[in-house]
Amino acid sequence: MNGDQAYNASDIQVLEGLEAVRKRPSMYIGSTGPKGLHHLVFELIDNSIDEAVAGYCDKIELFIHPNNGITVKDNGRGIPVDIHPLMGIPAIEVILTTLHSGGKFGGSGYTISGGLHGVGLSVVNALSSPMVVGIKRDGKIYSQQYMRGKPTSPLEVIGESEETGTSIYFEPDAEVFEETTFERDILVQRIRELSFLNKGLQIEVTDERDPEGYQRIFKSNGLHDFVAYINKNKEPIHEKEIYFDIKKEDVVVEIAIQYNSGYNENIYSFANNIRTQEGGTHEVGFKNALTRVVNDYAKKSNLLKENDTNLAGEDIREGIVAIISVLVREPQFEGQTKTKLGNTYVRGVVDSVVYEKLDDFLDENPADAKKIIEKAISARRAREAAKKARELTRRKSALESTSLPGKLADCSSKDPAVSELFIVEGDSAGGSAKQGRDRNTQAILPLRGKILNVEKARLDRILASEEIRNLITAIGTGIGEDFDISKARYHKLFIMTDADVDGSHIRILLLTFFYRFMRELIEHGYVYIAQPPLYGVKRGNEIQYFYNDNELDKFMSQTDKKWSIQRYKGLGEMDAEQLWHTTMDEDNRVILQVTIEDAIQADEVFSDLMGDNVEPRKEFIQTNAKYVSNLDI
Image 1 (tube, one colour):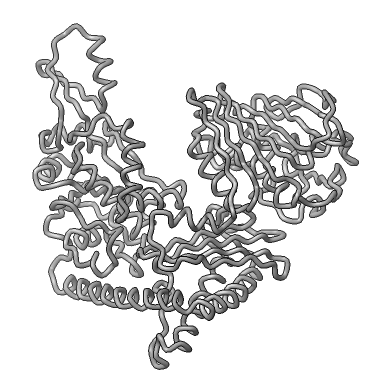
Image 2 (cartoon, rainbow, N blue to C red):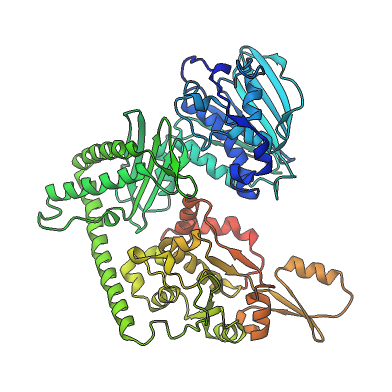
């Protein structure tokens, strides 16, 4: 670890008070739902990660307690406890009670920091009830307690220790959050990511709520392991990963790359340990350099003839898994969700580093270079074939009186904001849905059987499928390079299938298609899964509907009257009125919105479920079988 760089109260800069956080928590943590709740833990972990990046910490511990409290501990320098020169109170109290205070702002305590807004600890304190901080520093152990952002005890010395570090315990304030139960999987996903991004750092997770005991230790060899993790159920086309870690012009650039035999592009970029979901200058620099260096090598090695047109960037990126991690002194985050790196000079730095290092790799590994370039040439052929297929479809549509699929029962409204498309399984369910729908705002598209598994196909083959072409035409956005979210004809797309194995398979096939080729529909919140009831319980003219066994059992245990129970094995078993009332009527229906919280995890799930490798699929089914109770087999 690093030497004894001074880090004390004079490094802490103060900007403003905490009142605003409790009044408008969503401004600081995104929401008061599950996302905001877990963000509190990430803020504490990010604070410890900053100590690790600075070279003062190599171990972080996370404890989830039975009461749903959280403790985060590290072996860093310990937050300063000396009296702040301007505020006249201990530095730790300034940090925990003042918004925008911290060593991240002055530039002397930290040279590189991760916290997205640099407001972490004070925001967590404001939204906690209670918080207890423990600090080992200068041979002593200090402790102080807080409640909803305010100290309830002075900073006290409670013991002695030769060790250093910080420990923070908190419970989320139930007055602020809709739900205060932490999901271990969400926390573990981020911690695994952080361990990959910080080579050699050990992060331990202990969930004391688990009756079987849960403790995991995450420690990695850096981005090498990150790429291997993403590619673990895929088939790499070259054994040796492309890896480099260089500091240039005050920017640390670390990149790992490995191609697989699949057709998807997986590029994940980070700036100061923050996932840049919207990309940014580092990602642009990487893509530009990758396209140039592969084309230059292909021509000088005669894999492309001098007169051939260059390979497009998307051709070169087919099957790539790349992790781009940069450390920047003062990152500027832009975009809708503040996850786009904006520092313009970073683009040039990454571009030059990537070109130089990739050029070396290709020269030194000609067999691997040939595989990468041949894959890109094959991707270009498929892309050009797909382009011809799209043009043929467009020309055909222009000649016909209507370009919409024949089986589509469209709605009369032309306003996408109120229009809904129900994608249903088979003609029988389609018939009931067409009769029961609100014709003004609800359209029905029946599918004939199962659509193509797009996880195993390139775009040219996908566009050869009539069912997929009908789906693309009905939605109206186009696909691939033609995709335009503003042309969506419906702002709600419902996948409505039977509660059996075939219905579940059709649902995952459709979700795979939307995720791989129309992901913006999911990101804009347009994709839903309809939840038809599993049971209808009838007595005379009275009927009640239940969506799972627990609901039904509870109802039946509380009634002494005789009811007849019908189990709906398929949508076709409901008449039009029942389907409307239970599944399509906005006032009564139960729906699930499809969201992507974590693209890396989503990619992993789709690869496991729909890829060629059987073992991960088998493991997924065995792990999750206990959650399936209402599937007809």
